[in-house]
Length: 209
Image 1 (cartoon, rainbow, N blue to C red):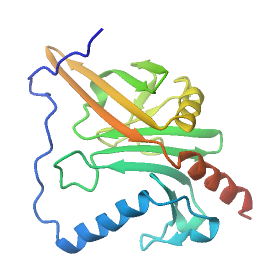
Image 2 (spheres, rainbow, N blue to C red):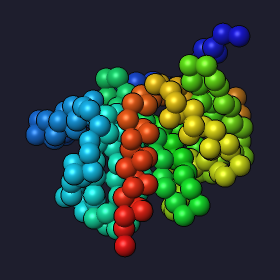
Image 3 (cartoon, rainbow, N blue to C red):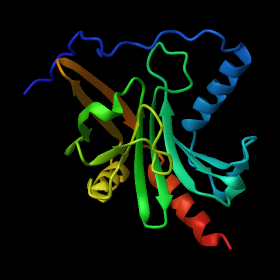
């Protein structure tokens, strides 16, 4: 079956408008961060304190972030801008380590999170499709976050993470409907460094007093 074309409705996906007001200095910082994302995996000694008060480390395409200077919650994040966008990111995948295991949060620009009907994870040799009820709007700790969903424990999260760790790329598909209006979006996510990022988090948590 071929892919459905996007319907030109009020929800039709489009390239984000250029956002004015981003200084050349901030663009340079963003460029340095993107360059670091493509570098080789870092050792534990390459953790660094971010001005936001977080402990961070780059692992190829993924960034590890631990809140409260490393004493708080940790997550592996891949954030990226859409082609032609001046935003710092339009799409984000976060794997958060909680007391009961790993959790997946997804952010997609313009996502009507309360009208989503289907989210699909496509790998090179596998596809995992989720229907409404397999996620909740917002982040796990803060529900009132727009354009974001958190997969529930019944969403086959372990199988998705296993496929992510074994793969090179992931395409996430989103489909929503509200009356006659339809919305679809795709996000192609590189997976290099994800296993190293998750291992760094586990090692850091085990070493904490």
